[in-house]
Image (cartoon, rainbow, N blue to C red):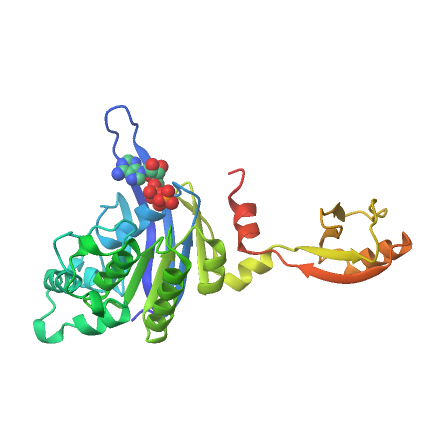
Length: 310
Ligand SMILES: Nc1ncnc2c1ncn2[C@@H]1O[C@H](COP(=O)(O)OP(=O)(O)OP(=O)(O)O)[C@@H](O)[C@H]1O
């Protein structure tokens, strides 16, 4: 028995040419394993291949080559079991406007063959905060409520793995918080979560591990903590006691910038330059220091350093 929720090897997808569009190699041989119980972030610039990868997992896109195992089941050998192990919250609300939330959840449960006695409709309505709208038509629900219903639909068959494709794109802060609370709750109860997001600060806060894909290839996969540690660059921000129009002369390897608010920002590699050297250079220039703060690279910096120019 594997400890991985997902095991992907040599996954390729080429979309066939249509009309004037040439064939597109969207995934070029991805190897990826996602541990059970994790919150895993799948990141990449637009067009990187994230949705294609998710749609292969969901069984909505037929892969061109490679192996996909979901909760230990080979997608090609045990399609029913592998599909039952995963629930997908898609990007776009694909709800029937004439169904109520309760009706939508019931239809979805029926599609997955969940017997009536085992359905968790009321529990899911509570979780997604739609108990009081259970019998309202979907067309009368707000955009945020529809997103929550999509999450509910992904949960009806009690999957071990939940995939969220851009769950917070264009949603307000309140709904975002509610979604993340739900995700944490589900993860605490043992569910493996895979998510794509354009909000890197969210990925940084939520994900244990992250894979970044670009142009159909995986460029990095590591724990969030390790990824943040890969950038050796730091910034020391010094507030002088009086306005200083000029930067002090600096030793090699340090770049300085005077910010609009009057602070002096020095960027350096922490493995090569001790912060004390910067402070010394500032003092030597006759500048009295009122305050010092330090800025660490965030996931956005890591992402840009790995994907820009490729
Ligand atoms: N059905 C399709 N037919 C042809 N090409 C496609 C199809 N779906 C996606 N592509 C192409 O495959 C590449 C990967 O697209 P994909 O949607 O997987 O990227 P993505 O990382 O999810 O991007 P986004 O964040 O914009 O959704 C893109 O170049 C896209 O244009």
